[in-house]
Length: 180
Image (cartoon, rainbow, N blue to C red; front, top):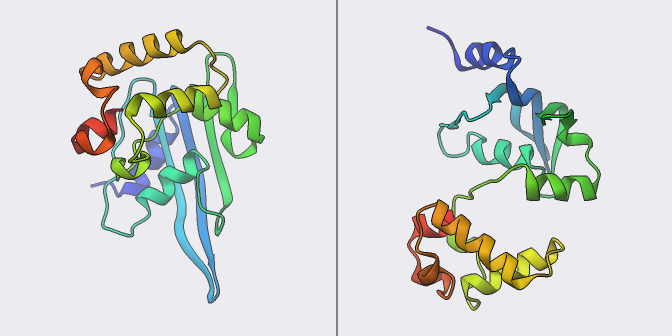
């Protein structure tokens, strides 16, 4: 039987990987010193592949996920390893992206579904208002185009867009909020 470390190392050698994580270490700085959250993780994902991180509470699943997209809190630090994303035209080291390139990477290349989808929304704004605000923050100016894209994407994830867009977050189930 293979250990998780052995399996991840074997998978990480796959040349078809679009996401490759090699020897990643993450720590949190505290007043009492550093706390090691992630120690030497290796994994890879091929195009179209799904990956589930399974472990006990506090085992580092969320820290690793946040580290991959560089959304860690200020007290956390990836101090060793590489996170590489391969596009059709080139490979990108996510850890070396500047702020603008990182924003584009998060907007165009990756997605993360957070554990508590309700907390991701402003409870006093309707879903459409929040989608429009986000689109504007990323340079979209054509409201009709954003709405059409939102309708397409919500229908793609099997949500009734005409019901979801005017709703407040608390009016949606947890699964619906995650898909929005």
